[in-house]
Image (cartoon, rainbow, N blue to C red; front, side, top):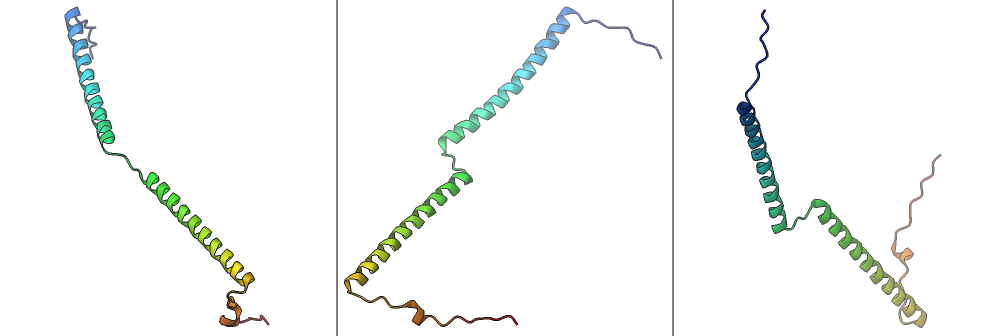
Length: 107
């Protein structure tokens, strides 16, 4: 096996090589920048609603519904207490309407 000697390039060859490398890198960068900018424009035009944001909104809505239900029940209880104190209506006892509980004994 015979070793090859070193081969040096001329100045013009090295400049051509450097310009071709720079041009290819520039094309790659421009293509990636173009893709990113197009993607961001699409996002700006259409509002982005992620699943997390939708779930957060649903949760807030459910919490508001629960709070309003609690407030309504509290008002109803207060009205019933007031009516009982004034003697306007008699509240039916729930124990009479419910069947007796079955008891289980372990022997």
